[in-house]
Image (tube, rainbow, N blue to C red; front, top):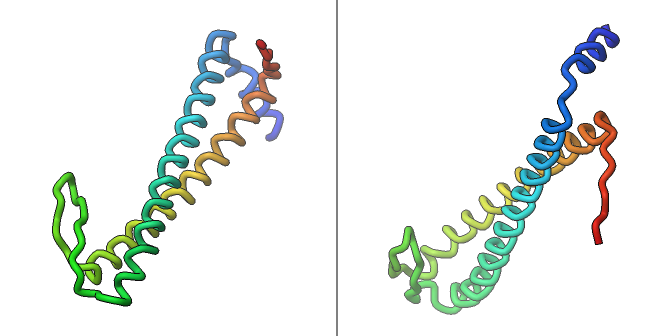
Length: 126
């Protein structure tokens, strides 16, 4: 049964142009995932910074007003209302980062299998 799968793989070999296109697609997808993870990590750090500042204010004066940008509209709220929402957003962002990291690892593994299957050697141009 394993040999039937191997034969099916061999008959479905890609042309040189298809291999190059697939290689480039893998690189682009991996780079896009890494870029999105970087953006979200930066956003999570911003949430952490704001939360650390507002947590101090929350202890001193929970009714103090603050402003929050929601959908492009600046809204006046109290610190006690904003802090839980920020925590929820931060936690959601961190979960998305975890999911993207899993996708990244999966895509990278798939990419390395593709490289191994087609015996691709990269050329470093300096």
